[in-house]
Figure 1 (cartoon, rainbow, N blue to C red):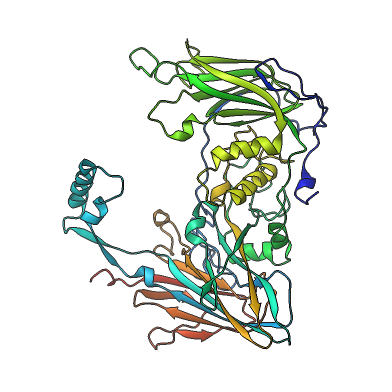
Figure 2: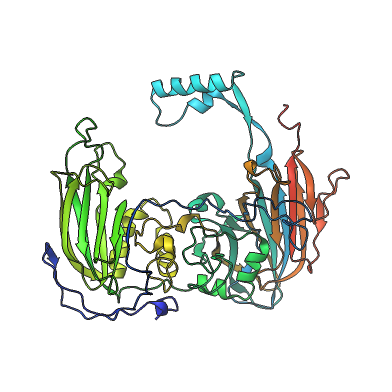
Length: 546
């Protein structure tokens, strides 16, 4: 059993047999169920779709001054949105015969303004001629000069290594290149690895958001000892990454296997083919909705749901409800996917489906509507994978996304020992998996000849760290880019240099690299004892006057 599998709970009680559409009957199984932490006194709670945190929200609103409350121990600012540092290359297995020299280039080419005409803005794929004209008219009103200058605050990073094999035999090593980011931005931030000018085949791994299981590392996320906290904090500084990565456990966990949940039996209720009337405001039917009601023992049953957008929870009377709006033909494909209730522990009872005029639980007006309900028995792994085919169908790295999604459910969702308040109602598609910072790893194989060297490079687009414009901090308009020299790396690095390609676009506000644009110093040697280097800049005020 893998390390991640070992933290699965044990269930208690029996799954009852139901009578709804027995599609896949199976032998009755006894499961051992964990006793869930007692909640407060009996209550009735009604919720709808929740709200979620902004990406990479960290720091404090008034925390940006150099050397002030928002400055790190080395003088770097603590930004409200921190993109994470550029990490060094490492080896899967340390090898003292492999030496490295590193040169990192920070290229501000994306900052060069480019003229973007209104015609280009309107000429979008999928637009009809009428939509193009409407868009063009709008942009002509906004930009009467025919267009505007556009640029990016991203930079291009080339992190290059000369790997030298000092032994008398050829060596094939597994290299790992770490990079920080979020799952929903993976396509943009994923580096390209090359060796000898040829792109390498890579395998992608993902570290955990918190770097461990529930409650393992305090401060990331900083839950302030409150499992009901609404917000999940992102890492605010390079020190947060240092605290997670420096002992090697984070990497070892990232390279491990995802939990196997096939040993957890579940009862599944699948809802398909909902039908009902069209919305009709005048007839008092603004939002035809299917509501599903059932009885359950809250101490012996946990219900996960997918595809529902409302819920009613009555612990005192052992009653629960789920609801979804009846899809219309013109609605997105996702709205027409099957809905699921996944029952762990004792089965639910007395399930019914009812058409209602709205999704509001305080409106009891009913209407003629229906849905097909199919009940069958399965295991948690199989049904989660089935649901993931719908929930994650647009993800290019599906298996990785599925593993992260499953791990989040076990670490912070209803399957965690101490689930966060925002997740404990079991809506498994409403989790913050894709917008939370983590460290990814690209692995590749490189052969270095005996006594020879190989040039390896990681090239990527790197977003800057910043304070939100509305915050009025001292860092307003300043962007930060940083790197670490040795964090998480077992490579023996004999020298590191940094190169700045400013492209005439920036003014340096704060730094510890030692660049000097006025005197043409754009390449510096880095001190191996300095763990962290940072560069904080503003764009030149005249750069759009072209």
